[in-house]
Image 1 (tube, rainbow, N blue to C red):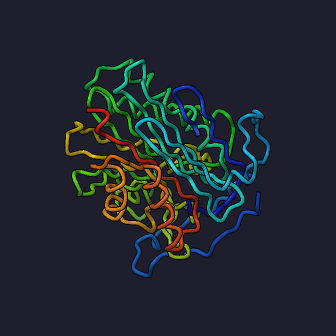
Image 2 (image 1 turned 90 degrees about the horizontal axis):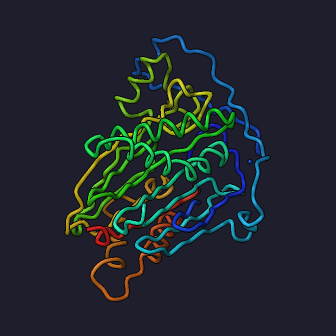
Length: 335
């Protein structure tokens, strides 16, 4: 995740029963400028925000604190899903993930998520441990036809709970809820979900970045401004994503409301790829499907974990310095 403050911390991926869940350098102020033709120059800009650096101190159970040697890579080959995470240039990984299968004892119900933290790991850690429960609580409370509203409130409740903890940092999120034969994909930020329809890739999410015209309009309407800083569009000269969990100092503009898409899982839906922007900045949607599908579909020795690794390795070979997390979910298990 690219932002104005990079605050590494120790990664924690907790493994428990059905669920797999998955801090300091001085803050810097990049030089920022709007393009000459930008109407943003007409607005008097507020002072740049000073985002506090996150603290190193947070509680870890002894069993949940991996050694530094293990921090660089995390991999899980689960039932119907695989995930591979590789640390980038930071001393500690800020990505997290969660996976819950057999929800409520139903083998065809599951919840998966990738969480890309910035400004420390606390927000991504919190989302990985709480978003699933909050979404499912809302789903149970509402009619099936109101699933998008349920997911929205699950995200908003998670954000509200995190802000009450008085913690710093933020996290982008992409989640997939599989329920009653439907795939419910949601995102807040620039983590992305891509589905394989046969051999064709289709993005199920749209990245939330200040460069998106509708996102920029929303931010400006709320009194914020967007600048190009070192070639990257940023909110208040600071953050390069426009939605996510946390980011209390930018909360007026960085909202947690997700965009959600619901599709019926069909036989031609082979696999779903959830990944942080560390992958998508270097690998296209179609490339990801082209690499993953032969290792996941139509052979007796399917190797989805190897597919995750190959995608991560490709991004690294193309110069990615970010944390990279890739999860592949075999959708044929849920038809």
